Length: 160
Length: 269
Image (cartoon, rainbow over all chains, first blue to last red; front, side, top):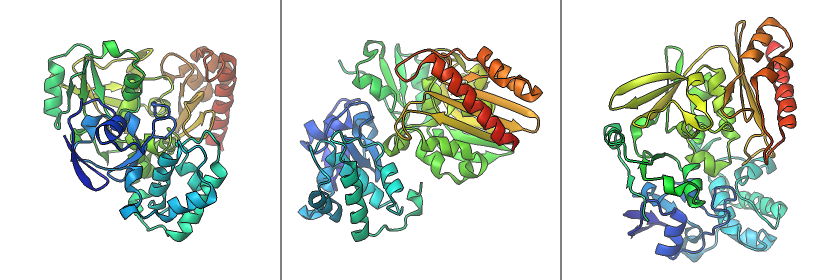
């Protein structure tokens, strides 16, 4: 089957119910996406499919044929960290690091949602991403600071 | 062992798979329930085949015709939150969609999946029951409509036949529908109880989740609410909650009663 991952067209031969998470990590060797709970609770495996946030542990390979997938490896375009990533580093938004790739992907999606980066909206956007170090204050702060540098583009389709 | 998967793009092709009645067939939509079970290897030996309907576009779409809101089985929670028709005609359904999981779950989980998974904790189900929704089931033998309160038979058992798919949910509009979900936190939590009430003139319809083996119409409570008698006592005759990891039976009885009374007060005001 074919799919596009981080802008690159890829072809893989996988069992239809293989998890997108495993397809990414094992077949494409994109190990930035992490597995936490494996049941859609923790968000560590968050990626975007056709621009929308999903838990890659709950998506079967047969459902991503022809899809556009964005993983943590594709967030920094041309090796250049986004403002979000840079501020995460500067502000200590990452501790043990397991939640960080999923957190960045979820926050990256939020910053393109057209929503104001209020404390409440940011927390709602990352409600499905658990940080076991409970570093939420610095994570939320980093996302809010990033929103100042990457002003939200109004996208009515993304309104929630 | 690899489980065989069919991923049809049309209803006709999906019906063809169903007609063969492959043993242990499970339908896959957004995957937020079935993939969890597959990942945990729960009941894996009972899954013989998977029918992946995610690309059957005939199962998508939201419309309003003649006072009925029709929602395709593959309508996701995100789509219900964004749908102008849902927000305008059945705002409670848009609001409850907001309370299911978080963004990633809302983007994949579907209304049809919530109905067919038939968990007593399915968050949309009390709303559909209180609204007297109908489920349109289809297969190569034709289509039929089953009222929501006749669909849930026993724990996780539904009226859906082995060769049928849920096509869409039809909600007759009218009156005012309200609900309250009680979970451990605002997002990403399975309900401890969820109560929905629809008031249409003098008629009151009440349904609750997590208080019985199936999502439940509470007919004794409805009669009490309409007659002005003791609703809490009547509700106790309807529900049969259990102790589990999320709450005790005592907690569920008390909170379900409290929530119901508060919802009824709000509707009377």
